[in-house]
Length: 626
Image (tube, rainbow, N blue to C red; front, side, top):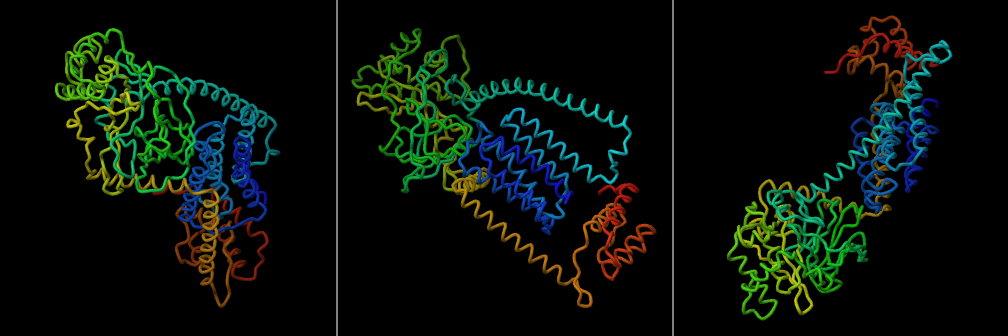
């Protein structure tokens, strides 16, 4: 009873800490109940090592699936799903192991799992109470470790001076740990700030999509094969992400800092074969992606963030951003009408660009004809280049139009946007992705970083925004329709299958997952029980059936096996005893044989076997493993 209680204490302390620190106290409370139940009921589930590992993996997967289905934000206050999963999974593993005899790795693994759970719980910043939980856990772990030590001495047998020295050492160790933790926390804050700054800079330089984009950042994307989106459904040409309206000094930004509108949408995928699904490969991105004029939008979250220019944003903490829509006019997120900001441009560019645009659009009577003329001129007289290097100190767009005559999509789109503004046509710069690569395995479309693209949305007198793309598409084979092939197709099929499985699990309710887990546990337990029964039946001699050997004897055989003196497979115990050449051990084993297979008294045999184990541990080292 005492040994079982000591084994259960570390997981119980970790479970109490998680229940106090999180907003979801039910799972850790159930863990406490099961842990204490193992003390009262003394279960002995005979599970082999391979099955133990399989059960742990299944339990972790069910934990992940349950957190996904619960709708808990991935990150946020009170741990969030990410931290909560890190705390809950090892805690449930430690609790499950309390019902197994013998559990692989023994109490040390239980303590390690509990410690990982307690460390993850600290992410909720529970305050001074967390320190109490840590001290309680360490005390319980120390008591358990001491009970497992065959060389332990009673505290009463220690000299007073030794006890005082031990107390001083404990105090010094505690003070050192607190000091180290404080210094580490300060260092963490400094490093965290630097990493956030570096991450923001790297995000702009490597992804090219943010609220502030400098011309040229897309160059780093055009050679990257990293997958950013997967699109299923009918063919769609492009997906808009960032919409910007202010240009200056070679950089596009947003003229106004605006609050995003949380728009309620259906949670269920719309019906019909014309529905398009867009799934982000990286949930931590700020932008979602919808084409201009998308309608009947739906998300599993039931809401989407939209800015005034009709660009969609991911909701912070959303586990798996998915968008469903169809190309229709129903419930579409129409961009706001043109504003004054859509006509503004740097003062030093207005005169030269107005003169150039006037010449290019001479004789054109409508804005549509003027846009078509500017687009045709750029496609005809300018060259696509992935590495436009500045040759002068002029503004990048003025240099592109007047000097170099070469650049990539950002230069072509920026030139058209500013030329159109110079003659009174409102425009906006759009950054997003072209959709052209089809996966032959999953029958979906794969969007990679190299498919990043820039184009223009212009406002017409009819009151509608229209897409204008002056970039010569013949220079962008990765954006033209084509099939994926080779190893890339195989790897993409695996990734798509894994995401499909994750999405399926995320759509399951907690009731479904809980029911599946209960059924799985029942089937698993019945299978193991039946297997144990089959294994016990052949163990008969003259019609007698024997129980399993006691734990002390099993450990004695294991310790002898570790030292190269173990019993051979199918070797009788008497033959093994004859080989040992150890009078004390021989006497104990002969007593065990007489008690197990004869009529001798069993009283005190467990104690004698335990003493033999401790003597073996003290007397000879384990043989190094091969």
